[in-house]
Length: 125
Image 1 (cartoon, rainbow, N blue to C red):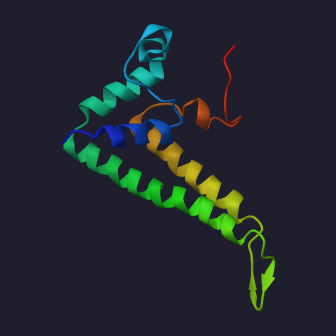
Image 2 (cartoon, rainbow, N blue to C red):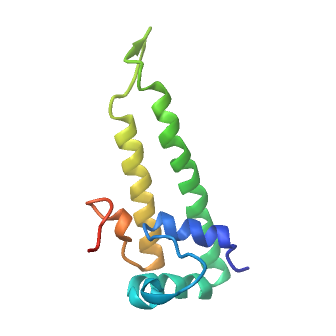
Image 3 (cartoon, rainbow, N blue to C red):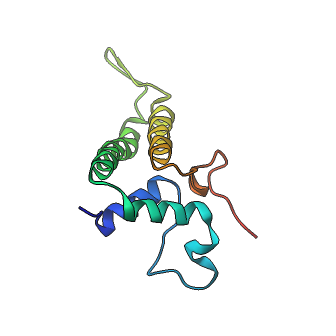
């Protein structure tokens, strides 16, 4: 079964690639980005078992992504009775999320996109 458009969007963004838009037009099309084109090619032509594995990645990534903003709810508490906040929780959750994003890229056989590189967002001038 082919990926839904929502799944394809999630794959793109989890792999660190920008929004695709309504289609390839002008200089922003995937034709100008080899890795992006490879990702699109693989998403369209995956076998059923490969799609199943990718969907497992998407499910795991969805859980990890939701946990990051939720950890912000306790940033104002340093200590409560015997409970102590992990001051590195946000950083650790983000690192775990990014690690799983890179694993998805590895499974797809594509390099992490511009938003997943060490420097964060990459500006092209």
